[in-house]
Structures are given as structure tokens and as C-alpha cells.
Image (cartoon, rainbow, N blue to C red; front, side):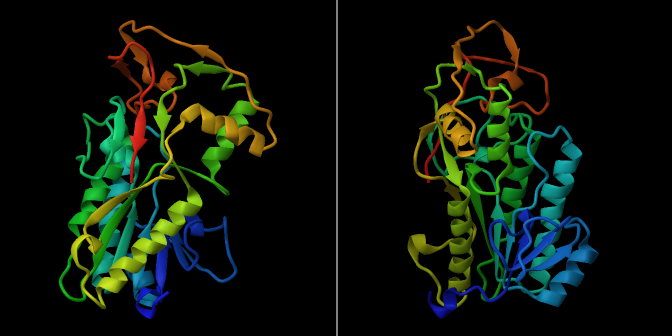
Length: 308
């Protein structure tokens, strides 16, 4: 690594060092601790707490991963943490002279939870309520745009960028473990749809590496101005394993990794009959309004392929 690529000091907001191990801010930092990491319990919506901590550390770079978990129905919580918390963090980071700010967005910010996405890329527009059906994703889209708006390419100013991982799995990931445990309890005995729809996942090691690369790039930009497509400030990037797979195939792989025998499922096709509760669609577009939505296709299931 060249000297100008080294990250001298950085802070990870949220995820308690699953992605980078330097300094960590989170509401609670008791899990995933490492001896060499400095931890700070604080609320990113509290500017006074943020200012005090940032003035003490004065980091070169920030990775912002903090968010309430998906699947909640509390719109105000998502707006307070993901939007206003991100705004507060950007303001404080700018004031203390942070050089690089990377936000962990989501691949779902360009998806309306209903339509198929095939070989989607970063040119697609962000989707907001009411077209966006998910409270979580709506708040991630708002924060995504906010971060990009804060990018400033003037000399010495803060450069910002967003990563949009597809569904993340890997060591230490609670979602993958929950899938395996649900399979063990018999919840995945029935498969809705023919199972042929493709999906993109991202191994958390790949996502972590992408964050590090994206921190290095703007730091290099402060030493030598990039040219052409090497400019990353103000840009956003999908992160996947670059491998389209069946959603159910990955679930089949997760069980045996946890010592759970593969579940033999019964395939079920449900013809269109007006409206259905979207929660029965599995990964095909959870509607966090928990109402009913029109299913315009003959069968359940969304086809999501994200290409980085």
C-alpha cells in the first residue's frame, strides 16, 4: 500500500467493528470488541456528544454503517437515526476536518419492492415513499442522497461516497444465523414460487474490503487529483459477489454450515387473486406499511439482480 493510501485514523459508526477495526462509535459497544480498538458509546443524533468525541479523535476518515435493523414499522425511528443522525454526523465531520466519509447504503434504494431488477446499475434513480414500500429503504435512500450532496471536491474539503451492498451474509452475521435457525424450526418447508428467480448477495468480507478501498480512494485524491473514472467523490457503488444465484439455493447452503440438514421443501405456486399480504412474499418486497398490495404478476416473487 502506498503511503498516501494508508488510513491514519478512522471511525466506524455502528456495527461495532465488524467492518473495520480502528475506533468505533455506537449506541452500545459491548459486542464484537477487540483489544486494540477504542470504543465510544454515544448517540449519533446528539450533536454535542458527536462533537466532543470527534474533536478528541480528529479522524481522517469515517465509515457510517449505523442504522436500526430492517423490518421495523417505526418510520419516525428510521428518519431520526438514518436521516437526521446522518445529517448531524456529516455536519460534525465537516467541522473537524474529516477528509473521507463513506456511507453504507443499501442496494434496495433503487428498488420499489415490487418490480423486477435485472442487471441494475448505479444510474437508476433512488426510490422514495410512497413509491417505495419500505420504511427502512426509504430512509436509506434519503441518507444516501444526503451523503452525496455533502461531497466537496474543493482542496482539503470532505469527499463523500456511498456503498450499496446487496443482502450481506457471513461470519458474525445475525441474519444468516436466523435463516438457519428458522430452517431448523421448520419455517422453510414450503417454497413460494418456482425458485428460479435470481438474487445477488454479498459476503461480509467483500463488503468490508470495499469499505477500505473506498476510504483509500478519497484520501489519495487529497494528494493527487484523480482523472476520469477514477473520481470517487460524490459517487455510489453497488457491492455484490458478482454472482447471480437463486435465493433458495443460498438458504440451502446456510443450513448445513450451521449443522442443520438441508430442508426438503414443497414448491407452491399461488395464482393471482387480487391482493395478498406482502409479508408472504419472502424476500420479494416486504411492505413495511403492513398493508396489502396488488400483485400484478401471475405468481409471487421478485427477480432482483444487481450488477456492480
